[in-house]
Structures are given as C-alpha cells and as structure tokens.
Length: 454
Image (cartoon, rainbow, N blue to C red; front, side, top):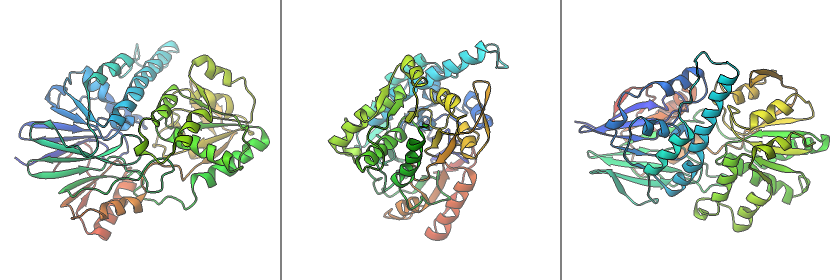
C-alpha cells in the first residue's frame, strides 16, 4: 500500500491545517488546527473528521498558532488518547494559547446565551478551558534535528522554520518516502525571529502559500509604524492595535522600542499590552535565545518597555485614560478578546487610529476594517468607523512568494511532487504556477478532504 495524504484542512484556505498521513493501516495527523474566518469555514469545526480520534496513532505539530493547534482539545475530548509531538517552544506556547482559546469560546457562548443572540438554545462552546488543559498532558517534546518515532517505523525530524518560537518544518520518513511539511515559514529579514533553515531533501513537499501571490514591500515595519504613531502622538489620540498574541505582539513592541531609542517617537508615549496571553508569551523569549535575534537588553525591553495588563479591571481602567497612548490587544483579526472592547470605545473618534498588523482572513472583523468598511458590528452594536485605519504591510511573519520559492530552490534535489497548502485559492494557485514554471516541478493545489499519494 502506498503512503497517502488526506487534506482535512489548510486546502484552499489559510486556516484549519490538518494533514492525515496513512500507511499500512496506521495514520498520523500533522497539525490539528481550527478553521477561522468565514462562517462556512468555522462550521467545519463542528463537523466530525472522516476518521475517529481512536483511529489516529499520533499527532505532530509544526507550531502553536491556533490554525495549526486549536482543534487539539476537541480531538482529545472526543477520544484521542495518544501523544502530541512538538518542539519545546510549541509546547510552552500551546500551554498559553489553548486554554485561552477554550476560555474565549466559553465567554462567547455565555454572551450569546445572555443576550439570546444564538439560534441554538443554549449556545455551546466548541470546547472549554478544562478540555484544553487536559489535552496538554498528552504533549511530548523533541528538540530540533533529533529524529524520533511517533509510530514505530515512522521517523520524524523537526527543523527550524522561523515564524514564531518553536516553529518547525516536519520531515516524515515512512514507507520508503520522505515527506516534508514546511509549516509556516518565517522571513529571512524578520525583525524578531531567526530565518528558516534550508529544507532537507524530500520526495513530496507540502508548502505554505499564505503570501504566495505577493512580495513584501521594501520598507520595513519601522518606516511604516513610525510616521503613523508620530501623527497619533501629535493629535493626542489612542491607537488600538489588534495583534496576534504570539509573534506579532512582540514584533510591534520591539519596533516601538526601537523607534523610541531612535528618537522617532517620544520616549514617554504610553504603550499597553492588554492580553494576558501576549504578556505570558513575551516572557518566553528569555527561554529560547537561539530562536530569535534579540539580545538580552532587547528581551528585557520587550517586557519592560510597555505596561503589561493582566486583569479585567486593569483592562477596563484603560478606557478611562486619555491619549496619546498605544494599546496592543488580542485577537489579531479582531474576532474576539479584549481588543473588541477597545475598538468599540475608540474606533468612533477621528483622533484615534486602528493599526492592522498582519494577514486578515477573509470574513473576519479585521478584514472588514482593513477593507475600509464604515461600520463594524461589535457585541451586537454597530460602531461607526471614524478612526484612521493604518494597515502595516511589512509586519508579516510569513515568507513572501519570492522567499518561499528561494527556500524550495535551496533543496538539494527536486521533489517528485509539491502540494500547495495554507493559502487562499488565488495565492495558492499563483504559487503553484510559479513552482511549475520557474522550478519546473509538479505542483498541485489539493481540494478540501481530497486524498493524494505522498
């Protein structure tokens, strides 16, 4: 029997990454992500997988972001009892992200029930904080470059992918085949993270295509963020910055620190990080110095250059402060979390600013703000968008199309097959075409739930 891959997520979309590898009656799941964005995609989270959790023999994670790990609590609650394999950094981040995801889902369900806004009676969370905490007991960690066998005879090796702490590309050797899962690739010129390591040779490659249709701009985040915050400081406004708690929050904090050190921004401009998850993540940079570019002084500035907001009361107190100030808060696509309260409070004032810092999945509130919609709905209320909207184009932690192609080109031998995943349809197909035309490799964009030879 040949090795086969079924694409249970991350096919034709950037969310829900799940790749099921089958060989001789055994199967391994690479990534176990949540679908986000459009309701049609989010509804997939409620649909059963084509295999039962008991039939899965191992789970391997590329990294901790919820579109790669956020389905794990549900998988474990529904009966998956075996190991979840990842790097130490991914384990530490999942210990922050997954319980918070469960908590937010409980809060969202409670809000819908309280205000009778759901067609379900009662509305239920997909999973709870307790579900998330339970699945963390199944995590097993492995260092980069140290091969292990999640299933007897199935050999896996992690190599650094940049992107965020712990992020890895996964090389799977099984059935005489070498299958490489890129995971989310970081940038060579990232402000925070070290670049991805050159890929090992493989017969089959699954390559991410988040930015498969574009190149990052020449200007960097400092050139974009500096003038925007200068304008804000002069008019005494409040900047609300939806950030991903893992990666983007720390990149923006570091950029603001550098701008203050350079004298571009006033040293006394107040900055608040209002996300317990992001606060805890920021502390992890001390533990993984080899994975990022910051020196000890810069790591210290990450945690001490802004006011760390932990409690709900501290968060509410920000609403009573006057500008100028900068509030970084999750979630990064404004789909939930404390940032919604700050947007509701400040988005209606023309002196204020909303700074979009990264890729916004279609259908999210962040995507609607970035597209210039004049009104957004938050907690059942329509908020008129009078604040200046600034979209940073240089803050992404993903490789762009040219960087992705360069990473592939550095492989020692051409693979037999490339599957283009983790990208919207246009981005994925454009990258597929470039791989076919420039590298002259076989490349395919698989359909959701399709099965292909590995």
